Image 1 (cartoon, rainbow, N blue to C red):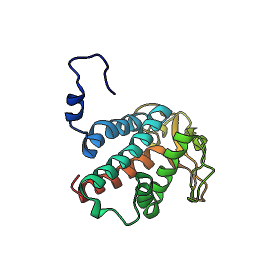
Image 2 (cartoon, rainbow, N blue to C red; image 1 turned 180 degrees about the vertical axis):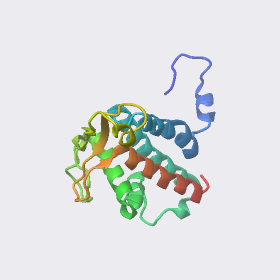
Image 3 (cartoon, rainbow, N blue to C red; image 1 turned 90 degrees about the vertical axis):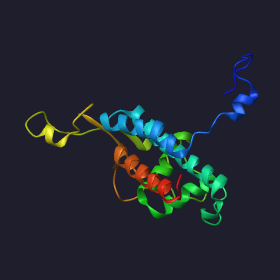
Image 4 (cartoon, one colour; image 1 turned 180 degrees about the horizontal axis):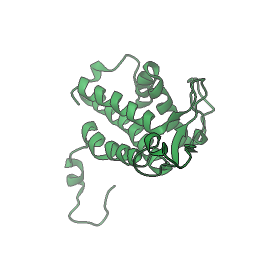
Length: 184
């Protein structure tokens, strides 16, 4: 964001500022959001932040590849949206993650040719774990945070609900492998 009427923040300084790399974005934005969701897997805000920043990381990776390594992009990959389709086509969790992030941004996905596993932002929600208080609850429930709830994602396929934490953690692993593969 440009600061107007600030002599210490010129256009030249703005253009000279280094761009955040995908690795820095992962380390400083995505991973802290994932850590917060891990600490409190029942918090919807943490789940939304983790899903959306992980989706943004895909955009960072695409932009970096376009700038510095365009030859490694799959043919026909002409936008970050199409780049997101690549891991979604290979991996169910990445597919669910792509669709969930789009649904969270747009509210509902009812147009276009893409096969969607998630169509509505309402597919994500807090669900009770259903553990009665007692001896075995501590063994089954998360160790920290709100142990009565977990954020779940319901899909249109027959796979059943998925934990938002598991979904984001898996997608982060896939993206981390992409960063290493391409030296980003």
